[in-house]
Image (tube, rainbow, N blue to C red):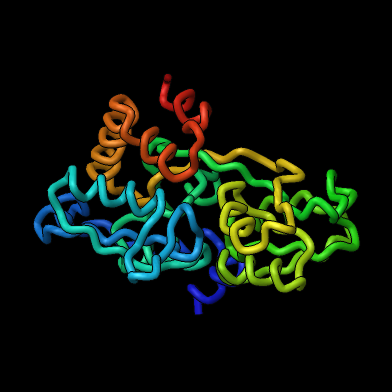
Length: 269
């Protein structure tokens, strides 16, 4: 029941979440990963080009490549745990995943229940719409049907910023949100600009583009609260892969864009 309430919209209180977190005295998470020889990483496979499953059934995308490189550098096997924006944090808290690498924005609310590595990437939150929709401001969304993925920071931001009369339609994952847009159930979509690539490929006539920028978030690798050895190892890995250009290269390969400057600034660059 607790996880269902969390998935319904991050409505679960911090106190309740803390109650289901691992208790003091548990085994060191980093050492456990090394002992088992495997790291379980929660990734949302419905958010190309961040993460997806191709026609051969293989996981692909930026987040997948980040997780693969991390596992390779640590000398362990990668096990991808398919998740959604709504259940990725509950998976982490209940021990079904060791880490979350899934466009997980670093927020004060989330910091109360999980820890984060230093930022390894960044993501804008935008309202996208076809050129013909005539959307250029929040006022233009009044009376419109706006799709967003439930339990995401996109959901949080549009819920906070939307003016009365905006009809927010919440879906369980990005694939369903995109389907709603393409089928005419929604007239706009709150997400990251990179996701418009797949929409334009399916419906180029829509001329789907960002129309309103709501916020730019830094993303980090999520880990269980209090695992200081694990967080230190992740921070070191991110710092090294930023310094040698690996993360910038992976980002450019997937998005044909430079890694957001805010990521380097947050890491002292």
